[in-house]
Image (cartoon, rainbow, N blue to C red):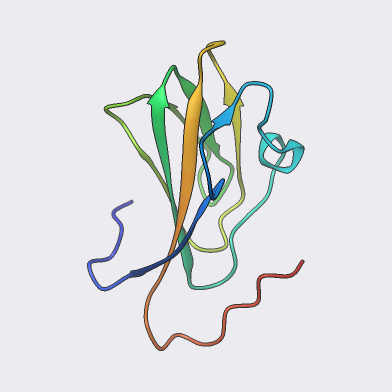
Length: 105
């Protein structure tokens, strides 16, 4: 998938620093999704990360500093560290005027 050109950034997680092998939230390690209309970009700084897309067609990608992962809205996915030195962030993007963003789950 390709991030649409018209998207605007909502936020980056974590807000400071990066997720590491020891700080990845448990929710990212099991199947989850973004809200309708919200895209994500997984940006690896160091190491390697497994990014598994679970629908509509299963696919597995190995992400590193040269290969980002694009998260399509509402698609189930999960990640797993492949190296001990993993450091990454997740940026969330939204197409303007596509409705309110509800962050609470």
